[in-house]
Length: 224
Image 1 (cartoon, rainbow, N blue to C red):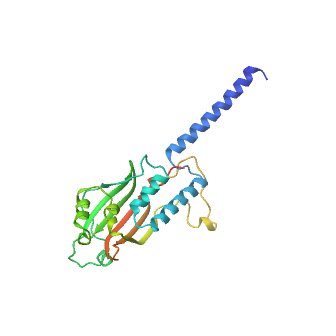
Image 2: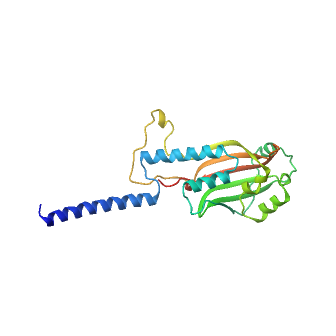
């Protein structure tokens, strides 16, 4: 084969490789590719995070570990960004869950938990200030320190009331014969929130002091 033809053929191959790499890079930058492997990986990540949240009392510390393990930010540190606005009313049955009467004061705090500039969770928190120390109440009123870190001295435990996947990359019954979606050239369409937990926190003396509803964002899914 003449050199000029050989060089031309090499150039064509190189051009094709660059084009394929560019397409792959664009797909990666857009998020999770719509393939069976990617869908399976996303579901595995969601189930792993769900299991870790269920097995640890502090969602803040769990997210911090998750952020570090998945390299979601340069520093694995969770910061609570206060979301100001009208207080949400207590959910039905919350006073019974917290073991308080109709006149007991309850405070509301809404935060976005971020690791670096990545928002991982939106949390609604109703807590009983009389069951916290004055210093804890001061921090909750005046700072952005995450709730779980503020109340850590209480040696609290967590009772999960509900843990719901808000999105599944695979259809129900996928493991028992339900047809799987075909792959496409697009990225997966993932909603803003993918997982939600509802839980009551108890002091070391087994006294309930907080009801939390945590909605985890799609940013918890590390890119493949």
